Image (tube, rainbow over all chains, first blue to last red; front, side):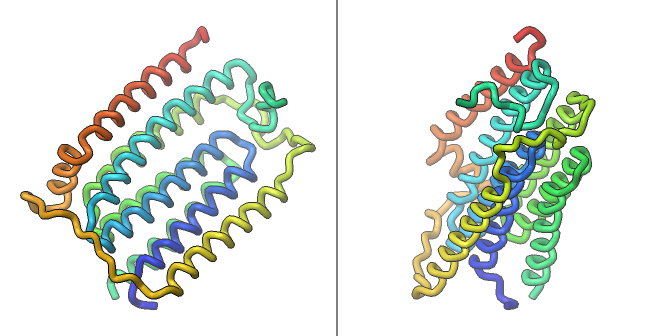
Length: 102
Length: 171
Protein backbone atom coordinates (compact mmCIF):
# COMPACT_ATOMS: atom_id res chain seq x y z
CA UNK A 1 0.00 0.00 0.00
CA UNK A 2 2.68 2.47 0.96
CA UNK A 3 5.12 1.35 -1.67
CA UNK A 4 4.22 2.86 -5.02
CA UNK A 5 4.81 0.36 -7.81
CA UNK A 6 4.24 0.84 -11.54
CA UNK A 7 0.95 -1.04 -11.04
CA UNK A 8 -0.37 1.97 -9.13
CA UNK A 9 0.50 4.24 -12.01
CA UNK A 10 -1.07 1.81 -14.48
CA UNK A 11 -4.31 1.82 -12.49
CA UNK A 12 -4.33 5.62 -12.29
CA UNK A 13 -3.68 5.77 -16.01
CA UNK A 14 -6.47 3.28 -16.78
CA UNK A 15 -8.93 5.24 -14.64
CA UNK A 16 -8.03 8.53 -16.31
CA UNK A 17 -8.28 6.90 -19.74
CA UNK A 18 -11.75 5.58 -18.87
CA UNK A 19 -12.85 9.05 -17.79
CA UNK A 20 -11.72 10.30 -21.18
CA UNK A 21 -13.60 7.53 -23.00
CA UNK A 22 -16.77 8.31 -21.05
CA UNK A 23 -16.41 11.96 -21.99
CA UNK A 24 -16.01 11.14 -25.69
CA UNK A 25 -18.95 8.75 -25.74
CA UNK A 26 -21.44 10.61 -23.55
CA UNK A 27 -20.95 14.35 -24.05
CA UNK A 28 -22.35 16.06 -27.15
CA UNK A 29 -20.40 19.34 -26.99
CA UNK A 30 -17.49 18.77 -29.35
CA UNK A 31 -15.12 21.09 -27.42
CA UNK A 32 -15.56 18.89 -24.35
CA UNK A 33 -15.04 15.81 -26.53
CA UNK A 34 -11.68 17.26 -27.62
CA UNK A 35 -10.75 17.90 -24.00
CA UNK A 36 -11.62 14.30 -23.14
CA UNK A 37 -9.22 13.19 -25.90
CA UNK A 38 -6.49 15.29 -24.27
CA UNK A 39 -7.25 13.52 -20.98
CA UNK A 40 -6.72 10.15 -22.68
CA UNK A 41 -3.39 11.28 -24.17
CA UNK A 42 -2.32 12.38 -20.69
CA UNK A 43 -3.23 8.99 -19.28
CA UNK A 44 -0.95 7.33 -21.83
CA UNK A 45 1.86 9.76 -20.99
CA UNK A 46 1.62 8.97 -17.27
CA UNK A 47 2.05 5.28 -18.10
CA UNK A 48 5.08 5.91 -20.30
CA UNK A 49 6.81 8.10 -17.74
CA UNK A 50 6.12 5.65 -14.90
CA UNK A 51 7.72 2.78 -16.81
CA UNK A 52 10.59 4.94 -17.99
CA UNK A 53 11.38 5.54 -14.33
CA UNK A 54 10.85 1.90 -13.37
CA UNK A 55 13.14 0.52 -16.09
CA UNK A 56 15.66 3.35 -15.73
CA UNK A 57 15.39 3.93 -19.46
CA UNK A 58 14.81 7.35 -20.94
CA UNK A 59 13.23 6.14 -24.19
CA UNK A 60 9.78 6.30 -22.58
CA UNK A 61 10.29 9.98 -21.92
CA UNK A 62 11.39 10.52 -25.52
CA UNK A 63 8.08 8.95 -26.59
CA UNK A 64 6.18 11.34 -24.34
CA UNK A 65 7.83 14.27 -26.11
CA UNK A 66 6.51 12.96 -29.42
CA UNK A 67 3.05 12.30 -27.97
CA UNK A 68 2.90 15.89 -26.75
CA UNK A 69 3.93 17.15 -30.21
CA UNK A 70 1.22 15.07 -31.88
CA UNK A 71 -1.34 16.24 -29.29
CA UNK A 72 -0.48 19.86 -30.07
CA UNK A 73 -0.88 19.23 -33.81
CA UNK A 74 -4.17 17.42 -33.21
CA UNK A 75 -5.54 20.23 -31.07
CA UNK A 76 -4.61 22.89 -33.64
CA UNK A 77 -6.11 21.07 -36.63
CA UNK A 78 -9.15 19.82 -34.71
CA UNK A 79 -10.04 23.25 -33.40
CA UNK A 80 -9.51 24.70 -36.90
CA UNK A 81 -11.99 22.20 -38.32
CA UNK A 82 -14.36 22.98 -35.45
CA UNK A 83 -14.23 26.73 -36.20
CA UNK A 84 -14.82 26.17 -39.92
CA UNK A 85 -17.75 23.91 -39.11
CA UNK A 86 -19.20 26.38 -36.65
CA UNK A 87 -19.10 29.18 -39.24
CA UNK A 88 -21.14 27.05 -41.64
CA UNK A 89 -23.62 25.34 -39.31
CA UNK A 90 -23.73 27.48 -36.13
CA UNK A 91 -23.50 24.46 -33.87
CA UNK A 92 -20.94 22.52 -31.84
CA UNK A 93 -23.28 19.63 -31.10
CA UNK A 94 -21.87 16.40 -32.53
CA UNK A 95 -25.38 14.96 -32.96
CA UNK A 96 -26.01 17.66 -35.56
CA UNK A 97 -22.76 16.96 -37.39
CA UNK A 98 -24.25 14.28 -39.59
CA UNK A 99 -23.61 15.65 -43.09
CA UNK A 100 -21.33 12.77 -43.99
CA UNK A 101 -23.27 10.06 -42.19
CA UNK A 102 -24.50 7.28 -44.43
CA UNK B 1 6.35 7.36 2.33
CA UNK B 2 6.67 10.80 0.80
CA UNK B 3 6.15 9.30 -2.64
CA UNK B 4 3.02 7.49 -1.44
CA UNK B 5 1.52 10.67 0.00
CA UNK B 6 2.32 12.60 -3.19
CA UNK B 7 0.97 9.82 -5.40
CA UNK B 8 -2.34 9.42 -3.60
CA UNK B 9 -2.95 13.16 -3.29
CA UNK B 10 -2.15 13.74 -6.94
CA UNK B 11 -4.20 10.74 -8.05
CA UNK B 12 -7.27 12.01 -6.23
CA UNK B 13 -6.75 15.48 -7.70
CA UNK B 14 -6.16 14.19 -11.25
CA UNK B 15 -9.15 11.87 -11.25
CA UNK B 16 -11.45 14.38 -9.54
CA UNK B 17 -10.50 17.14 -11.94
CA UNK B 18 -10.87 14.73 -14.87
CA UNK B 19 -14.42 13.92 -13.76
CA UNK B 20 -15.07 17.65 -13.34
CA UNK B 21 -13.86 18.32 -16.91
CA UNK B 22 -16.42 16.00 -18.45
CA UNK B 23 -19.32 16.73 -16.08
CA UNK B 24 -19.49 20.53 -15.73
CA UNK B 25 -22.25 21.99 -17.91
CA UNK B 26 -20.32 25.18 -18.75
CA UNK B 27 -17.49 24.82 -21.23
CA UNK B 28 -15.32 27.58 -19.74
CA UNK B 29 -15.33 25.88 -16.34
CA UNK B 30 -14.38 22.68 -18.07
CA UNK B 31 -11.32 24.36 -19.62
CA UNK B 32 -10.24 25.71 -16.22
CA UNK B 33 -10.51 22.24 -14.69
CA UNK B 34 -8.45 20.92 -17.60
CA UNK B 35 -5.63 23.39 -16.81
CA UNK B 36 -5.62 22.28 -13.17
CA UNK B 37 -5.58 18.65 -14.29
CA UNK B 38 -2.55 19.26 -16.52
CA UNK B 39 -0.73 21.06 -13.70
CA UNK B 40 -1.33 18.08 -11.39
CA UNK B 41 0.02 15.73 -14.06
CA UNK B 42 3.11 17.97 -14.32
CA UNK B 43 3.67 17.61 -10.56
CA UNK B 44 3.30 13.84 -10.97
CA UNK B 45 6.09 13.96 -13.59
CA UNK B 46 8.32 15.72 -11.07
CA UNK B 47 7.60 12.90 -8.60
CA UNK B 48 8.62 10.48 -11.35
CA UNK B 49 11.93 12.33 -11.91
CA UNK B 50 10.98 13.58 -15.36
CA UNK B 51 11.69 17.28 -14.83
CA UNK B 52 11.97 18.16 -18.50
CA UNK B 53 8.57 16.64 -19.26
CA UNK B 54 7.03 18.51 -16.33
CA UNK B 55 8.25 21.80 -17.80
CA UNK B 56 7.08 20.81 -21.29
CA UNK B 57 3.72 19.76 -19.87
CA UNK B 58 3.22 23.18 -18.31
CA UNK B 59 4.52 25.09 -21.33
CA UNK B 60 2.79 23.17 -24.11
CA UNK B 61 -0.36 21.84 -22.46
CA UNK B 62 -1.27 24.30 -19.74
CA UNK B 63 0.22 27.25 -21.61
CA UNK B 64 -0.44 26.56 -25.27
CA UNK B 65 -3.13 24.01 -25.95
CA UNK B 66 -5.49 25.18 -23.22
CA UNK B 67 -5.20 28.80 -24.34
CA UNK B 68 -6.17 27.58 -27.82
CA UNK B 69 -9.23 25.89 -26.30
CA UNK B 70 -10.13 29.08 -24.43
CA UNK B 71 -9.89 31.09 -27.65
CA UNK B 72 -12.21 28.67 -29.42
CA UNK B 73 -14.69 28.71 -26.52
CA UNK B 74 -14.75 32.50 -26.73
CA UNK B 75 -15.04 32.53 -30.55
CA UNK B 76 -17.87 30.00 -30.61
CA UNK B 77 -20.66 32.26 -29.45
CA UNK B 78 -23.49 29.87 -28.69
CA UNK B 79 -27.03 31.08 -28.92
CA UNK B 80 -28.43 27.90 -27.45
CA UNK B 81 -27.16 25.17 -25.21
CA UNK B 82 -24.86 22.81 -27.11
CA UNK B 83 -26.37 19.74 -25.46
CA UNK B 84 -29.94 20.72 -26.25
CA UNK B 85 -30.44 18.76 -29.46
CA UNK B 86 -30.69 15.03 -28.81
CA UNK B 87 -30.34 12.58 -31.60
CA UNK B 88 -32.93 9.84 -30.93
CA UNK B 89 -30.62 7.34 -32.59
CA UNK B 90 -27.80 8.14 -30.16
CA UNK B 91 -27.03 5.24 -27.83
CA UNK B 92 -25.41 6.89 -24.82
CA UNK B 93 -26.20 3.93 -22.57
CA UNK B 94 -24.46 1.57 -24.98
CA UNK B 95 -21.50 3.95 -24.86
CA UNK B 96 -21.40 3.77 -21.07
CA UNK B 97 -21.63 -0.03 -21.26
CA UNK B 98 -18.76 -0.16 -23.75
CA UNK B 99 -16.69 2.04 -21.44
CA UNK B 100 -17.39 -0.35 -18.59
CA UNK B 101 -16.28 -3.26 -20.76
CA UNK B 102 -13.08 -1.40 -21.64
CA UNK B 103 -12.38 -0.62 -17.98
CA UNK B 104 -12.90 -4.30 -17.12
CA UNK B 105 -10.49 -5.26 -19.89
CA UNK B 106 -7.85 -2.83 -18.64
CA UNK B 107 -8.31 -4.13 -15.08
CA UNK B 108 -7.98 -7.71 -16.33
CA UNK B 109 -4.74 -6.85 -18.11
CA UNK B 110 -3.32 -5.18 -14.99
CA UNK B 111 -4.36 -8.05 -12.72
CA UNK B 112 -3.01 -10.65 -15.14
CA UNK B 113 0.33 -8.97 -15.68
CA UNK B 114 0.92 -8.53 -11.96
CA UNK B 115 -0.26 -11.99 -10.95
CA UNK B 116 2.59 -13.50 -12.91
CA UNK B 117 6.15 -13.71 -11.66
CA UNK B 118 7.55 -10.21 -11.66
CA UNK B 119 10.18 -10.17 -14.32
CA UNK B 120 13.40 -8.68 -13.12
CA UNK B 121 14.17 -7.38 -16.57
CA UNK B 122 15.58 -3.92 -16.55
CA UNK B 123 16.67 -2.22 -19.69
CA UNK B 124 18.87 0.59 -18.51
CA UNK B 125 19.78 3.23 -20.99
CA UNK B 126 23.25 3.06 -22.48
CA UNK B 127 25.87 5.07 -20.72
CA UNK B 128 25.46 8.75 -21.42
CA UNK B 129 28.34 11.15 -21.78
CA UNK B 130 26.22 13.71 -19.93
CA UNK B 131 24.49 13.89 -16.56
CA UNK B 132 21.01 15.02 -15.63
CA UNK B 133 17.51 14.38 -16.99
CA UNK B 134 17.35 17.26 -19.48
CA UNK B 135 20.86 16.67 -20.82
CA UNK B 136 20.29 12.94 -21.31
CA UNK B 137 16.90 13.47 -22.96
CA UNK B 138 18.44 16.01 -25.32
CA UNK B 139 21.29 13.61 -26.06
CA UNK B 140 18.82 10.86 -27.00
CA UNK B 141 16.67 13.21 -29.08
CA UNK B 142 19.60 14.49 -31.11
CA UNK B 143 21.39 11.17 -31.63
CA UNK B 144 19.23 8.01 -31.71
CA UNK B 145 15.91 9.77 -32.30
CA UNK B 146 17.07 12.48 -34.68
CA UNK B 147 14.91 11.36 -37.62
CA UNK B 148 11.68 11.01 -35.60
CA UNK B 149 12.47 14.41 -34.11
CA UNK B 150 12.71 15.97 -37.57
CA UNK B 151 9.54 14.17 -38.69
CA UNK B 152 7.74 15.60 -35.65
CA UNK B 153 8.86 19.08 -36.65
CA UNK B 154 7.47 18.53 -40.17
CA UNK B 155 4.22 17.29 -38.61
CA UNK B 156 3.97 20.46 -36.54
CA UNK B 157 4.60 22.58 -39.64
CA UNK B 158 1.87 20.75 -41.56
CA UNK B 159 -0.53 21.14 -38.63
CA UNK B 160 0.22 24.87 -38.48
CA UNK B 161 -0.41 25.36 -42.20
CA UNK B 162 -3.57 23.23 -42.00
CA UNK B 163 -4.93 25.14 -39.02
CA UNK B 164 -4.34 28.49 -40.73
CA UNK B 165 -6.03 27.33 -43.94
CA UNK B 166 -8.99 25.83 -42.06
CA UNK B 167 -9.54 28.90 -39.91
CA UNK B 168 -9.51 31.36 -42.83
CA UNK B 169 -12.77 33.21 -43.48
CA UNK B 170 -13.39 32.08 -47.05
CA UNK B 171 -13.16 28.30 -46.99
